[in-house]
Image: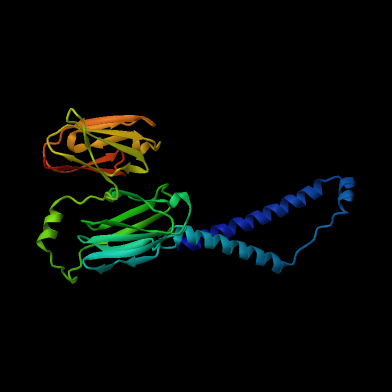
Length: 301
């Protein structure tokens, strides 16, 4: 219905413009002095056949209608993730957008999205899932997997780093007919701890100084490097954050479990100190909570 209204409006505007233009040309010819009209007679107007005008107008309106349908009215293609060994998995091609752009999954079950980036555009070199606090780089012509567990049904978006291209994850209520995968004791113990969306490709162990302070340097560029800092419980920790990324997201550093919220000046090193009292994993994030890292606190040796 909306498409018909839009196309009718465009056709009416085109017809009105054509009629108005014809009246203006006729009035100008009528008001033009005789001498000027005689000079302009050497340029004769070539009258196109009516069917040519109709064909051009129809083609133009068709292209406009196609663009409106493509950008406003077309629905994104959806595809349901397939469950393998208890994980809902799907492959997504990144090429001028995301294909498929709508993913159907069930709540309460692990999801793995495999992004294959084909498009060299810098806009698509990063993928973000704000609702799950995930932000990750997508190397060109490589498959990058992202895992998370949606707890509640709903619609969640994912987008590129510049928020120009988007996709949707539609989380449906749990499928009661789905086969239940037995959970071993080791798996149950693992899921007791909070799940983190932080990739663990890079990790470093803090170095102890002569004074007993555990020190580590974290570079703030396309995220945090390393993404995991390993320390021991009960000893002072000093983290030196070297910020090179000018994005406003990195203006603030948050470590909620230690009540820390500090400003990170661009191209400078900012140090934070705290003493972890209990073993565990503690997150640090940017101000917008798009990028995250982990401080892994181990028992004292």
